[in-house]
Amino acid sequence: MSRNPSKNANLALVALGANLPSSAGAPADTIRFALNKLLELPKVVTTGVSRFWITPAHPAGSGPDYVNAAVSLFCDLSPQRLLDALHAIEAECGRRREGARWQARGLDLDLLAYGDLVLPDVAVQDRWRGLPPAEQALDAPPELILPHPRMQDRGFVLAPLAEVAPDWRHPRLELSVAQMLAALPEAALAGMRPVTA
Image 1 (cartoon, rainbow, N blue to C red):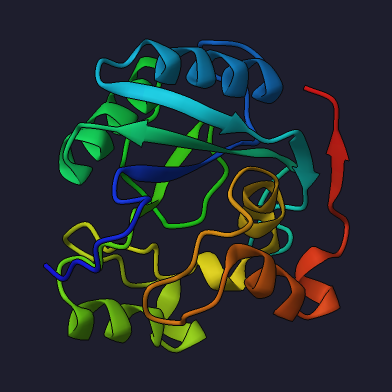
Image 2 (cartoon, one colour):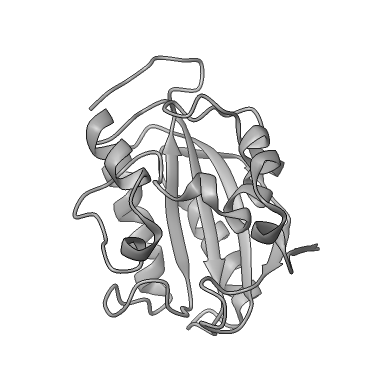
């Protein structure tokens, strides 16, 4: 584990997405349900919630459009305990963590970052971040990787995240969320649009 202490040491960033109905309802209803569950977690204080965004499924053609959002929160849970809580919320909505990667789903909650932590270490984070595109859909890390190794590549993550944590800096890339968003090619944002929650 690598830590670079900062004023945001307990700032956690979470991405939310859904493109199929869940036990909580339609995708937008599911995102609202998950946000309410996050508010109920002990030792967690939500500091920002993005607008909802309609975004094309990734990869293209893999399902209906997603509803995506992002939330920032201060958290006294460990990253692993927070991730476990996110997985419990997913399970409550009927998510089973099996099958192919990047498939349509009723709810997806991703822990994107936790302060300046690099987990499990710099070498592993860098290796997963640098994984060739052809291998990304085939390989999933067996452990929590922070920051999320694909966050810098995804408009559907960065556009909502820029609304709640534009100044958070990636500890390996040394770029803010706003800078990573600005660096994306136009194709990474194609078809995306914000909507009212």
